[in-house]
Every structure is written in C-alpha cells, then in structure tokens.
Length: 210
Image (cartoon, rainbow, N blue to C red):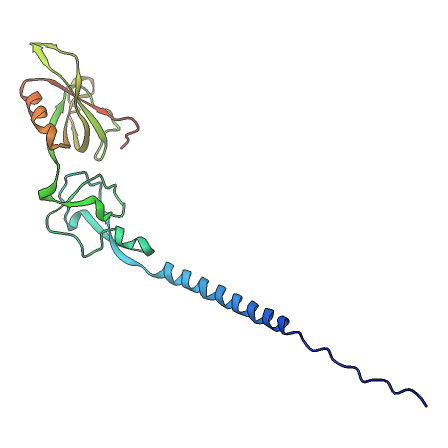
C-alpha cells in the first residue's frame, strides 16, 4: 500500500506580525494628522498692526501711523498689538522700524513716558546717514568767550532722531536742525546748553544707520 501523505498545513500568522502592521497604520495616520495640523495652523492668520513709517520713542501713535496686516503668529500672537488694541493716548517706548510688526511691549501711555522731544541746531555738518530713527549722541562745547569754546563733552548719550532739516544754502555742506527724542532727565542740561550759546554737535553711535 502506498503511504498516505499528510495534507499541507498553512502556517498561522503570528500575532506580533499583525500588531506591527496595525502599529504601522497608526503611525502613518498620526503623521498625516500632524502634517494637516501644521498646515492648518500656518493658514490661520490674525490681524495685527505694523508700522507705516519709522516711529521713534515718545512719539504719539494714531491709526494713521499703523497699517493692519494679516499674519500667522501661532503661539506668539499675544506679543504683538492686535488691530483693536490701540489706546487713545498711546506712545512708542522704543524705535519701531517701518514695516515692523508692533510689539505690545513697545507701546505705553503718554502719562508714563520718560522721554520728550527737543529741536537742536548742529554747529557742524550732520552725516548723511543720520535720519529718522538713528540713535545719536548730543555733544556740547560750552562757550567761554566770543568765538572761543571749551572742550566738547557728551550732553545726551542716547538720543533718537525724529527728523532732520538740512540747510543746504550754508557754505561747506550746511548745518542742520534736528528734532531729537531725549530722556526727560536730560532736558534741563540740554536747554541750558542751548541758552548759553554752546556749540552742539550730533554724532551717530557706533553701528547706527539710517
């Protein structure tokens, strides 16, 4: 009699193989969801303010100084001035460059402002790089007698230019009148130097630009 062969048995799939398959599916699904969330967050924008021009410390800020832009800021959205958060007596506490999003921390109220503006006339030519927003030093050479001045010294170490009016009709390039934002603690000394005929000069601080 011929031997009867045993039927071929199909091996059962191990349970750990099925678990690995389902784990792979879950990982792919999680990856897809993660990408969708990132794209969704990137598309979510909020209206915030950006500076329409360079704004200097102590300058009063109104709607005309700002423009509304829609940007995706994510978790840092609260750090910038929203389109409906501008107060009636807002002033800048630091320089805000043209086009820069306005940080909430750069806005204060007029009553708490520690700076003010004065107009000074420089006794010497002002570098062409000096423009609105430039940080400068104000130097003063006290008048000793007619035509004779003492050694120059720093009068205000940290002033910000609001505007520059150059008198090109003057020989040698001309002097300039500058509106400067200075600390209130320096106002008395600055006015005294202007009153006693001191020669005032504007010097850009290291690394300052227009």
